[in-house]
Image (tube, rainbow, N blue to C red; front, side, top):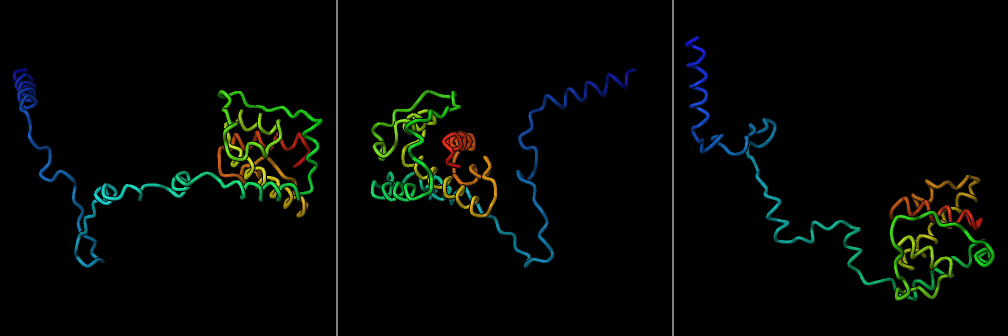
Length: 185
């Protein structure tokens, strides 16, 4: 019994001593690879990014810093959409339902390309919080992909619409539902 109490007190005494260093080397070292030249290279990537933080930006982040889409380019997209074999008059007499109740609507009245949209498309953009330029690009890409699938004799599915755009797949699904209610896809 005395041996048990002696070890427990020695462990307690050992725990109460503050240790300055847990390891001799703060980071574990690996042995150099035998196939290499015998040198170990240490590269501190944090210093590189501290000097030039723009290297951390992805391709999508760098595009967000650009100026908004030019109106001439938006007019060209609208002309391309108008040349597609879809009935744009469907917007005048059909009321497609928009299945999106996640957030408050966004005011897009001051955005570039607002005057190029139909009233129902303006409502869709504000509910989905999409700018008119992004919506027009997405509309063009989805309708172009649907046209390609039709030419190949394939069915255009919701997943195909999601692959055609570069943003949230849920928003792409809502666009696909909107376009399918108008018989565009």
